[in-house]
Length: 273
Image 1 (spheres, rainbow, N blue to C red):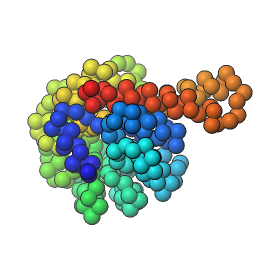
Image 2: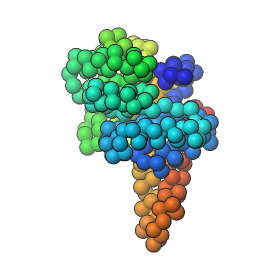
Image 3: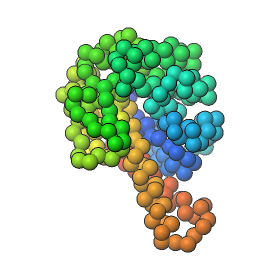
Image 4: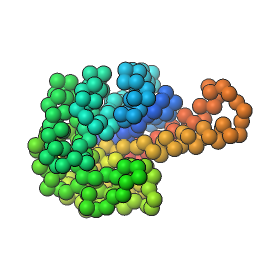
């Protein structure tokens, strides 16, 4: 099943799919073990920096091999692609879905970039995600002025034909300095303005009940990166600082389990189990 079809299916059932970033084999294994155990689909995400670290071909084949080995239904997605050129490289490498992020560009330029990628992706039958509004990245401040406007979301989707839209309703990338508060009223306005699949970025640290409310309000794809990456590194540091073990085959498994624990919890949460 194509990802865009799966998103519609989940939208109709009032559930969401977890989209988890991976950075190496170990974080990938933690994600897939959780998805396998829960018998739930998962979207595997790669950012440009992870692609540069792993290499595009290796990263794509690693994801495909992992999905096959663990018997998990899943899709490979480019997270926060900055240029149509990167999106094209990923599509050529077999990605099921690409995000073109023109959110920090003027509205018309964002439409132009997104439309270009949507047209490009048709030849691959691939899903395309865009972002509208300002979702703060690491080190950036965010306020309600940057939240997605319902009328702009409607215009943006109609002009671009995009499959999924990441919306700014109070979440942020990275850890939160204080407990986040999602603007669920704004989400409801956006949901009423467009039927497109809505995406929540920056799910790390959002309280469980608030996240469930966002899913009930129309969020169908939930992105997670920081929380699982942090769990992996915290566990690995604990092992390294308390042991003289040099065999990475012994030091990595507990860190993989830490990722699995986080991902399992999130999968259960977003699938509304």
